[in-house]
Length: 393
Image 1: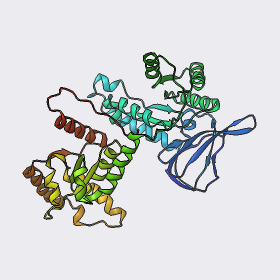
Image 2: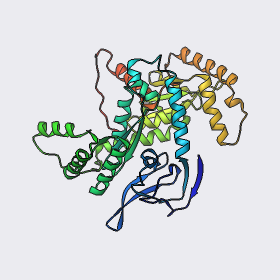
Image 3: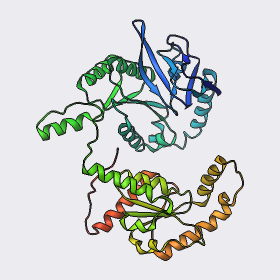
Image 4: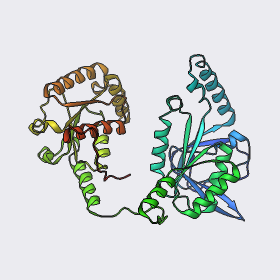
């Protein structure tokens, strides 16, 4: 791969030219422009982590649009020869497992593109797509689906561009358009180009319209109301910020939960994840041979204790140390961490704190365990409990 430092305003590639490279954005942003009757129209924006220009490498057709750097960019490019070599090697490795693969695994061998098209941020649709992909473990493990997000799509030209790109990539288009005219254009274009569509919100909105006996307003990007629930949520976020990393133990009486664990075990990200979903969360770093505040023992039922595999924690800490230019530290040494985890887990057992292993668990999975724990404490006899959600999506 080749590294490129691209100044703002540079045209990375031009519509109509032969595509010889695809680009991955490390930093900066790229706007996709399409010529229309002599003028250029913006049809998409790409951010760090996105790639552009890859379709021309796949189908050998001229560029369908131009790409312009809207900020100073750091890009990595991949040429067609290298891509073909990589695909061939990957195919050889994949076929080595074919004899042992199940029928379900055999059914998923070719990568698929999934385009998420939204008239807002598209975050809820991306989450839904990722959850759906996780129901196909083999495809998920081999990363057989590449999700491309097209945000704030409103014009007919933008919609036609996405559909044409989807046709070239044989992509599934998952959309959350609420404007009926935009939705009509999308469906017509998809039928015209034989593109698969999934309407994520349409059936839900239709069901609610029948239940409420009225039509939805069909207005994209509705603003969140600043009501009592919103102000409560802001209080939760502010409380979680004030009580990060062991600050203000005197405030822990107000906490819904208190998360404890070794350094770099994920306490702060989990705290803010839950804070954004309407919980007051405090967290405290457990350090061997240091006594925690007495307030921690006064709220045993609120304590959520995180543990993690020592090798995994050593890797996380090692990456952290590299950011500071340090490569050798007791803080990241596996032997030291093993002993640290042993001492911490003995403390957990002694105090009978509810413990979660985060080694192979993401924020959502860990949060789900905490929700179940809190629901059980609040209503231990109920076969199933409901939780009111006030958070930010």
